[in-house]
Length: 297
Image (cartoon, rainbow, N blue to C red):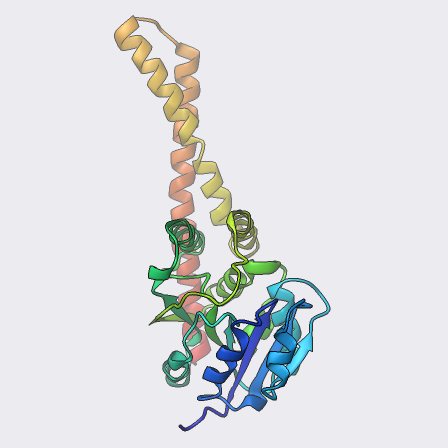
């Protein structure tokens, strides 16, 4: 099978002895083993031996977490395209060529995300991924289906532009935020998703941290939208107080003039903030389209 020559593969690992060997064996059908980089977070199992006996580059990361592993791996990247993939054998390598073809044929695309068929995930994980992906799409004005996928291909120059301020599993959303906020496109490819080899590392607490990090990223890349979006939440207490005052007035014939005024102010302020939030989001999209147009010229 013809191999792809302008592609490096980064595989961050932590105690992946059950899946890393299978992952590498599958990837080497499409990419020369010399272009595969494994960065390990000080595994306590047999991960290192599984990698080294296959002749693949193996490095121990200095920091902690997935983001630090990817950042460190960039020091060893020498190709224009980079595939980042988890080492637990959940992501089939057969999609590498399709993802690579999209990047080669469309200069406006900086990243291609593998959108998982999540039938092998529990309901809790499916809901968490659905919520976080839609939360990200709302904050950044994009339409993504799986922002937390552990298989994505990206141009080296775009990856180098990311600041890697977020830690751990938030790295995928930080990279996507960087791409979507700099005027270039994110493409998506539907992929299969297998049951992982080894123990799961992602829990509910990680999901909460990812959501918080998404808010931090929104403040960095589009603070006006976030500011007005938070302001729109004033509608909630405004509507609650308003419902209370209307109920008392209609059914109990009790007047609450002060509360009614407060409810009106909160609701009006929240509604105005919501409209301004939507407006700023569309202005941001217009800015990105103008950037994309100017980049073409």
